[in-house]
Image 1 (tube, rainbow over the protein chains, first blue to last red):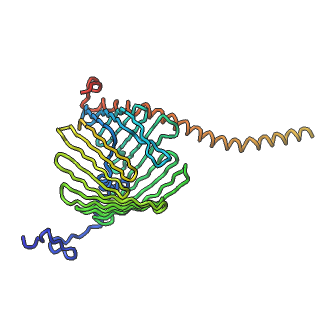
Image 2 (cartoon, rainbow over the protein chains, first blue to last red):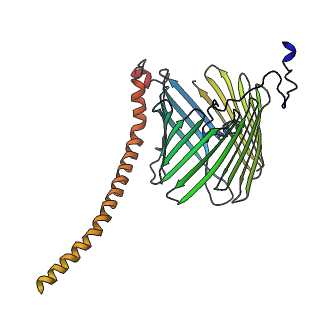
Image 3 (cartoon, rainbow over the protein chains, first blue to last red):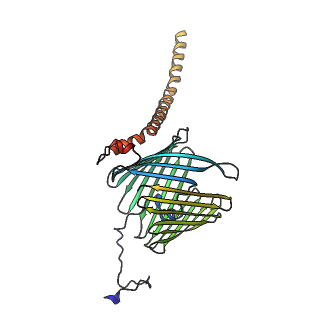
Length: 309
Length: 72
């Protein structure tokens, strides 16, 4: 019996002598939601960089309910017309409340300047989910809100999106083989009178994930993540806009070790960055973030602590 | 003659008011939906976090008010 098992170092792609896997095309797994198609590449290559000091305290009152207090002090970038980046030192306190239930999830964050960011996820039935997302400010015409209705079938997912400013979108993704899923989306922005169409594909195995997306707005995104070992993954991604002829390629690594998680990347725009989350103790995390843009001569370093689960 | 003239003007004014009636119903609908959107935005802005806290404080096991306010 042992001789029939092929050694793992020599895979045989054409002939699978011991395990002829017959694909049951009626029993394919449910695909990843359309907006998360680049999930692994985004998680490895785009951590939340920040500049300055950050302190987060999450206090759980209950298994489902928790409050969070967060203080951020540091320079924030202000959009400017010139090539120089203008930074203004700001300090913010943010209060948040989360309620997480298997059927209902409520997430709210409010800043001292009155900006509210709210997320609601509600399971209306076993397969139908409603999600709502809102960013509300005191300034007029700067608030956004969006509702999503997701339906999950046995091997497909569909989503309908309604947003303010007359935004309507729909997306559909289907598992075509156990490893490959294909999807498409269409949207209409009422206020700007724009419509768009997009297609996406994702191929994943245990060791790697390759994803690609193309949209009629001119955006092409390709991503590839390889899991080199249990603790290390390497990721690369490329974003190309064929309308504005803008290309950005990046290559990064993601080390998930017992006590820390280190993510680093280098960009074709001359930007290198790293993000370290170190677990000092149960419930105490130390965060370091660095982003060095050699082209624009913009250096951002940040440190922080996260207390609580 | 004068009565005919009066009828004509009445007819004209009646015709004149019909299209403005149609305009005003769609206009009223738009204004009403904008009004509800504005009120909904204000209500969500002030009420969302209190709503989450209310739902959380009434979930099992019930936490106490002192746990809500204390920093530990």
